[in-house]
Image 1 (cartoon, protein in one colour):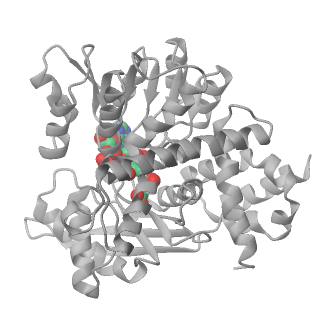
Image 2: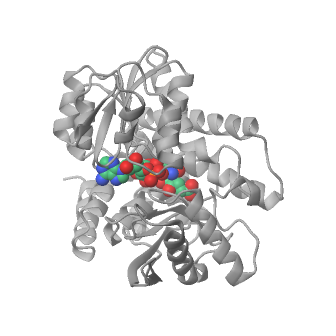
Length: 448
Ligand SMILES: NC(=O)C1=CN([C@@H]2O[C@H](COP(=O)(O)OP(=O)(O)OC[C@H]3O[C@@H](n4cnc5c(N)ncnc54)[C@H](O)[C@@H]3O)[C@@H](O)[C@H]2O)C=CC1
Ligand SMILES: O=C(O)CCC(=O)C(=O)O
């Protein structure tokens, strides 16, 4: 057994022992570490300096009580989290997720992934993530506001424009960011860039709302270009119908694709004529209803219960944009049997290890989340820059920068794959390229 395999086994052992009952965290660490073998062989100094042992341990994990009062006057209690994983290359940066499934292991996997993703953007941002098991679904605006105010009443002391800058994720959009920002400002009296994804009237950046979805398509364009293919004319399915999914569909359609399906956690819609995105925006961004409502507007479309069924639809390109582990080995097998050409991950860790293996064994072009969905956080960093400079760029300026960043990430990732002997394996390329920068920054800063 090589030296690198030994260290990897040892570190994985520690991860499992120290973080029991956190399968998503184990999965995320395993995926990264399995790719790192060639990089570790080349850099024994990282092992000597304990980089691998240090990089799996978050700098800080904050867990707190979030009490609030619902519309019936009842006291409710949720749990809040912020995991500040690694700030070797910049202030902690990463979204907040409000979803009943949130637990420490999910927060940790997301914050770990975020560290390497943020490194790939080339911008000075470290990795963090947070959230709560609060479910905004079915809550009134007043309830959401009271929850957000209570959440911020604790979180404010752990964040700051140069310390830790949260943003949105599942269940956290412009409404929630607005309430949290308002409470932060009220407590601290600071008017600064402590959040990204802010509204355009109070310091938000044009293009941030669209950035993750658009960035995903810019990355996919590069993946296809390398193989002499384009997005135009392709049949695409997109899971989810939230922020990432909606703007992935918008850009796919602008680039000439035919998007035939979207989903939410209850089920999916199939519209062979092509998804009418204005209807989805109305249902999801304004009315906050289920995707099922789509068929009331377009009777030619079909609705099916169960979100997993979307992967049985024949397509050229699949874009998972909902949540972790939404494509398992069986669903990946169906996509492959139907001749899928490319899969690019808009969500974080949407493919299980079995699914990734199925895609790679069958030569499906595969764009891993860390690289493919980095456009959101990259544009958040552009929002931070604009806030620091007290200026705002045009949509065109931000979008051009986003595109440039995604093309650069693609080149960096595919170059790393080639250099380390895994041509076309963008999973390995992204993990190695993301890791090297964080590791070098940690080396430079001593044992901390
Ligand atoms: N918002 C952002 O800028 C970024 C988000 N991401 C990731 O993209 C994914 C989607 O996030 P957003 O669009 O921001 O959230 P969102 O709250 O706007 O939308 C989430 C969508 O996923 C669906 N969903 C949630 N849980 C599900 C489940 N268990 N099964 C099936 N569908 C489910 C929801 O119904 C909804 O359509 C997440 O994995 C998030 O971590 C990644 C990079 C940046
Ligand atoms: O924009 C941000 O800071 C967060 C984006 C995010 O949560 C992610 O990349 O998963």
